[in-house]
Length: 190
Image (cartoon, rainbow, N blue to C red):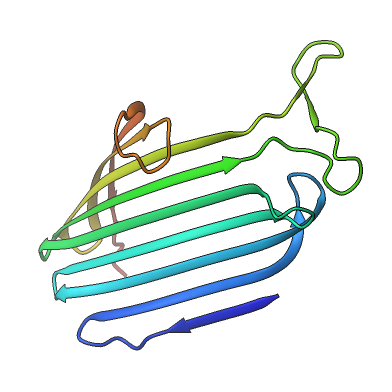
């Protein structure tokens, strides 16, 4: 395996880091040997004392050693923005796009026959098929700390899916979530 890893020092509120691993490992999809590539690149920027911005990109690839075709790939670009509106009030926005693709599986290490999976019925096995999942997740979090030891959170998140990766159109709503949380620290005098 080959590994490259670096980080920059923080310079005027900016820093970056990267990690890359290229080599051979198990193709757990087909229980055969694979060529792998794991990459993680991040950038942090702090334009003011109140604002932080972070961008990150991750990618994992698994390719068959026999013919170098792609078995599985996951790509995740992510952006996080945090802003301190006032001393007790904080807001965070996070956007993450997760795309995952997988080829139709086969017995790559031995027979090249298609891999069958159980489909629920008696003796009901079907071939695996190529597919992709493409989802965008957006989250908003607001935090309010009126006094030390007391904090209130409110958050909202939504997941959207689309047919083709990175088209950024034709999204369908998959799920939404909203939460409220409060915490109070009781002090016992002594």
